[in-house]
Image (tube, rainbow, N blue to C red; front, top):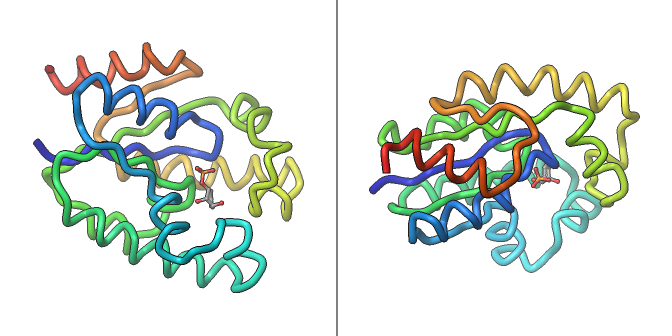
Length: 165
Ligand code: S3P
């Protein structure tokens, strides 16, 4: 079994759905941001504030390249990860990329007060523009799309059905 990789905007539910999916399919669960934090010994906001976004993107690329060598994992990516071609390129064609396509307002309500660096440094309008820009990248990178703000269990079941399992 190859990896199942979840992508989508911040607040779309990648972590929650990823956990449910990994339990449902008895697969190992990995969170890309958590891997970066463990590897660097810093939180994501600390990486952004101490070293800047470009450095974070380099760590992110290294982490996804490492994860891509593994098999049978459910992987939650950070909202920016699969918007970069170099990250999409390291994913095996055997892996399935799943896009959680949740409306902007739902995502924004969930993330607006969470202290995520990208949210803290952008207005709501800028976040909406980022959402629109990234959506086409998520669509291009994925072969399965779960549309709407569906409950996590429902999303996990829909993904399982899509995989025919
Ligand atoms: C980011 C999303 C975050 C995290 C970092 C950057 C982004 O992950 O990787 O703060 O650029 O969208 P979540 O999507 O899990 O919030």
